Length: 286
Length: 236
Ligand SMILES: Nc1ncnc2c1ncn2[C@@H]1O[C@H](COP(=O)(O)OP(=O)(O)O)[C@@H](O)[C@H]1O
Ligand SMILES: [Mg+2]
Image (cartoon, rainbow over the protein chains, first blue to last red):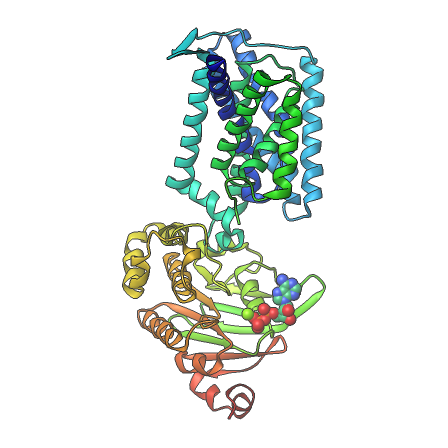
């Protein structure tokens, strides 16, 4: 029993940081421009397919395929910003929700036409990693490390580089950023691209662990919403911690009861947090 | 040729017209004051000059060039820099980072180290607070930072909106003296103030805005002696 618990906790945490990475993309965009990106899920799915296609048709190692997924996520995000977000950025929330939802439908429509909705999986293994009494799949372990590494890089970017500081400045006070000579629109496009890049990367990592279809992004998008609410909207580290909590719930609940209870518990938690602590467990952007 | 010229500008918000043909000129190297009562449109005029809102009619010239339609970030790049009313700092960033963000225009980037030295000399308090989040400082310190951030942008003209708002009189006096010193070092400054008395004392030239138009202008010493200005703003 103890061993099983330990294994579930480890597994939950490893998966959780990857969920956290995805949620970080959502929360970054919201934090900078107050837009909720409803195309988040489909972009995760595109990340999955990028890694899958690079592996199956080009023979590219899935972890290298992640670089392609990241590039695609970034470019796509910048395009989506200029095409669908820029014009509605100061409009009421409903406008940007509808607009990113349209992008969501477009990606899913085209994706379904090209890939159908049949399951794929990336058949790649890195053997087993043993830590004391626990054994975990090597890919899962590496994925979690990578997710942490990417989070670290994001923070280095935001706090140590000039463009990263522009992102924070525009997020903090867009008007002042303009007065200081910062081209806010370009910074917003970059921020959106970074958010979708994180989504695509998380998708790519998930693709190595679980089978997926072009529609799979939807359920991960919902997880991202729960995580973002747990961690506090606009708070990237909160997203990572929220991801771990969600991962733990997914790992531990099946030990005690039926796995079908997982989403019930997740969404009850979601509603409870919204009612009791809407700023999230770990504080948030004021 | 004047450094900045505003010619018959009308502007406002949506349907609401605020400026009804405002004109002014700022000469290079001078400290020019724009005064007038609360709500008369001073901030709106500054916003129009920096390009946060577009003039409906009329033009804004900078160094003889028509800049009426440029967005604010391009104007900052040219050297038209505003210290906005209410400071508008990057409150979640440190003092140091706010100053770094000030040094964004290309022309400012090259002189960033030198300007940092300069603002730390003028406002030693900021040096002590370099790693503090700007939003957690006192009102006076925040105002110093707002001015310092503007100086970091290496302005050709620095336009300061309501320097004295919400500050203790002693501190206000200090800040006005700092401005005077900057002006003596060659910086062109436009000062927008509700505190008419102080603004006229410290400035070289003054414009009085009333009902969205300029009413009176002249050397500050003369404006100070103007009977209607004395009656309306100086309580004499
Ligand atoms: N964003 C805005 N939208 C609508 N009206 C505004 C806005 N900002 C200012 N006003 C109005 O414009 C008028 C002039 O304001 P302002 O330019 O701030 O005056 P001042 O700076 O001289 O005190 C005021 O009546 C104010 O209520
Ligand atoms: Mg004002």
